[in-house]
Image (cartoon, rainbow, N blue to C red; front, side, top):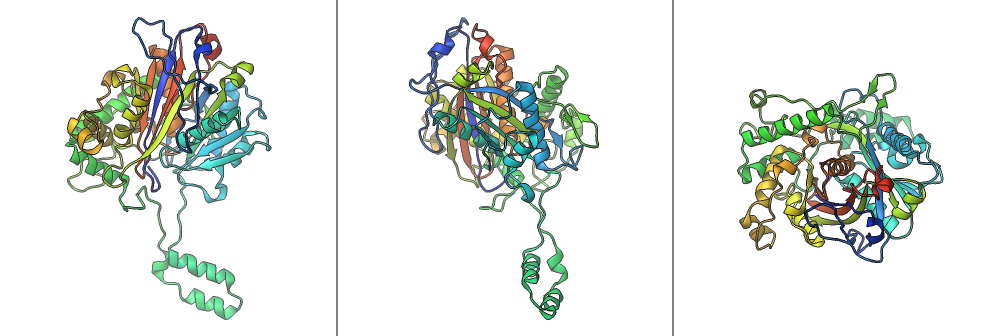
Length: 497
């Protein structure tokens, strides 16, 4: 969600299981300002055969570790903080988990959507607060819900170009205290007052203020180009694809139930404990709340009233949280004694119509990254899609399963194909875990990495929609079950490993 660019992000993960893997992998190359196209190799000790996907002549880029603060509903325990406080906590958690020297990073990049005006470059403020050397450059990017994805792919580009060997990327969003502006007329009056030179001029300007001038401008999760809120778009999309209220509620309940199980089973290993100043230590996400179909059915439509199907229960909620990952060249990571978890291999950005195809990013992005790798849906072991709305997920699944949609809108001869639900978002998703706009990308990446390791998978695919109609895809390798694992165990791939 956020701003006037609808971004979709899909990432392909690849895992290798051979003790000679490091000698056979060649990684990233930058093709343009928005596309990094790597080569993939695969060696497996599993019985089923997997393609090798590598391109020669480029350095290997690895994800060393990824962490996040607990994701909390806005207005709860984090309510009195500022965005840079959360980002600083994530960075400090990354330092603690990796033992990284604070001067060993070449660059820091953070993503965010609704910026705090006092810390417009939140990456720099958070880095300084976390104790990183003041000699390390830092900048902030924004690309709606894939802002941290853009931070990660920017990091990959810097390393692939030979500018850096180690980059920290991440994202933060703080919805408990968003900027609320005076009306435009009031702002103009106040600026004029600041320039007034005489008492008479000041009194005249004060006398021009009307009651209507005091009405504030509240931020909205809406498209600038269409003035439509994302929830309204999701409702229209669900209707267009015939997604019922029942289907949406069932998927939302599934998300919360799976997230609760993952939390109870200690599978969400990227979450770090955070001592909130003046409050208790926060250990876990607080938006995971399995309900019942009966309770969910009682809720009224949130956007299109009275006949809409999108409700508070089947939508992601406003969330506070931050994430951070460490991306390095493989050579640098091994020289420092790290055990990478994944190789980052490929990503691409695409854009769609922000009005009628705002949330269809996964449908458009997934086949592109698969085709670049020479893979099909059946090759993928782990799927992690961003759940902005249950209706958005279900609409994408129906679009991906439609020959007509593929032929009419995508120029394809046949449908994309749908992910098997037994491989899809098995540890919950944004509907249940929460969705801090600027931080979700890193959460998706680390989840895929951990699932691939736990499930013994080879490839993972991540996809995310966001505001404005844009799409990003990325592919990477994931290691498990090999002798080389002794060198890569701790790497928590920060961008769809």
